[in-house]
Structure formats: structure tokens, C-alpha cells
Length: 95
Image 1 (cartoon, rainbow, N blue to C red):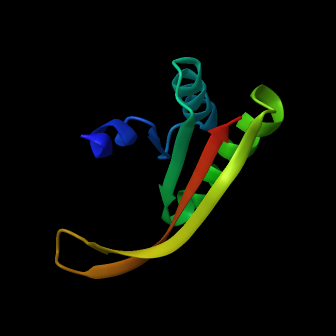
Image 2 (cartoon, rainbow, N blue to C red):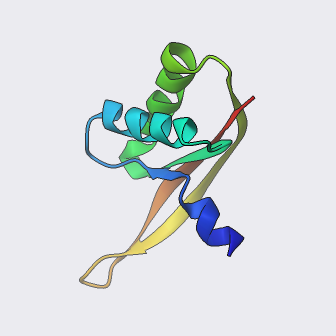
């Protein structure tokens, strides 16, 4: 059960503008979340970092980066090709 609850506080960064993800994280913190995880893969890892930094520098200066995890994930395309992409997870906590 705790794993499902934790997944509620995960922001998956995609192709939308960065501010949409910033607002999603702000909403999580406003609703009482103590920790939010910003996740991204491939070329979008830079956007995840931007989202975390905008949150910390503009909106919630009390936020701290608890942990950053980087890695490589294997994705299989529809035609069966396997490609490896970088991934990042940024753990933000409100103190």
C-alpha cells in the first residue's frame, strides 16, 4: 500500500512546457506532500533539472534536494529494437 501512495508524488517530465511540471509539484507540496520525485528519461533529463531548480529558486526556497539518482534504462521499440536511454530521479523534500 505504501508504494502506491508514494507513486502519487512522482512527476514524470515529458514534452509539455516546464511550468506545467513546476505547478504539478507545487500542487503536491501544497496538498501536504513532504517529498516529491521529479523523473525524466533521455533528452528530457535537462528539463527535469530545470523543473527542480525553478521550484527551489523561485517558489519554495525551503526545498532541499534529498537525493539524485541517475541510470540507464533499456527501452524496446515497436519494431523490437532495444535502445538505452539515460534517466534521472530528483528527490525534493520540504523542510
